[in-house]
Amino acid sequence: CGVFGVFGCHGAAEITYFGLHSLQHRGQEGAGIVACDNGSMKRIKGQGLVTEVFKEGSLDKLPGDMAIGHVRYSTAGGSSIENVQPFLFNHHTGPFALCHNGNLVNSNELKKFCEDRGSLFQSTSDSEILAHLIQKNYNDRTFIYSLKSALEMLDGAFAFLVMLGDKLIAARDKYGLRPLSIGKINGGYVVSSETCAFEVINAKFVRDVNPGEVVEISKDGIKSTYYSNMNKHHMCAMEYIYFSRPDSELEGRNVHAFRKASGKLLYKEMPTKADIVIGVPDSSLSAAIGYAEESKIPYEMGLIKNKYVGRTFIQPSQAMREKGVRMKLSAVSSIIKGKRVILIDDSIVRGTTSKRIVALLREAGAKEVHVRISSPQITNPCFYGVDISTYDELISARLDLEGVREYIGADSLYFLSKEALFEAAERNDLCLACFTGKYPTALYHAVKDANKD
Ligand code: 5GP
Ligand code: SF4
Ligand code: MG
Image (cartoon, rainbow, N blue to C red; front, top):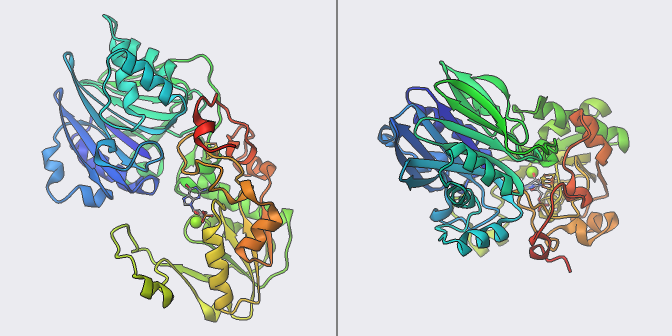
């Protein structure tokens, strides 16, 4: 998911709309904005892309100089409308709204805790839990005090935005798993899952929210406190490898620069003779450029992606599928024919993408296809909000390297080492749990749900 918030700017909903549009790659299932005008909050949310949910004139219904917004990618809870964020609550002290990116690992335990004390949940999304916990901790104390006590009870990955009538609050999990950055704009502030959203609205990067930190933005400026003393830096490696946009800076390291460096290391670790290098669009292009630069093998546009295949695109009938309708990717035979091809992809999850593309390249006349993956083998599920959640679906949890090579039909296959990820990221504290099985948090019910036998 992606979260975006604005404080102290006229037309906050419109700025949020543009912010969410640049975070669209983080979730395409739903989008929503809540705007606050002198303490009164209004919301529009719906299923689909940002441009589908907000039509001409929608934003006029969301006045105010403060807003938060969300794009949804469902990993916990279904994709139904109740689970589309932000959530909006009416409290006797005034309304508040919140939205969340990430995944809690102790959500079952916390839901039961809240239900035993009278809560009724409206959604199956684990993000609603924070609102109930805040309320449970409220008792005559300040909102911030109860928010911090609530955050302390959460385990897992999150970037939360909470909007009160007069302030915007941003909080990040104490493990530093999910990104969250602060920017400055026209005397106001913005907060975003990724810095790529700052460019489009002409905001200036200020700093990242720190792990375990609660940042309060109000007319008095920025106030920083911590809800936890145990603060670590385990940024999700997959944010660098696949999830984030290449123009984002994740904790000071540019995503394209990371991917390009990983492509160079991919060649250094396993030098291979070939005629052309091809990247799987779009997330693997940076790594392919790095591989080509290091190997001096020419980079070619051997695969073209049709950018207009959206969710609403009519699915081909079985008959059309048998005729070989391939909507998303086309191989360019005049480039590929007779060539020894290095095919770069960022990751193998189920193996379906690589298998399909190797077949496409062979049909287009490739002489050899050597698949190089710019991440290690994914042998463990992620419980922190990336959609690789069971052992069964992970091909590398079931098959060894040779088994995966045979399945995808490549002449050779190589995965980047974990050490190379650290080198490319210029840090060695990334979360690598899906590659190593060493999770930075406790796991509660999560492992059982992931079908570990
Ligand atoms: P597979 O086809 O092996 O199941 O998935 C790998 C491909 O899907 C890669 O090309 C990667 O770019 C893309 N992909 C789509 N969603 C995800 C995701 O949530 N995690 C990862 N690692 N890759 C994904
Ligand atoms: Fe990211 Fe993998 Fe860690 Fe999940 S387990 S947070 S995908 S590095
Ligand atoms: Mg891909």
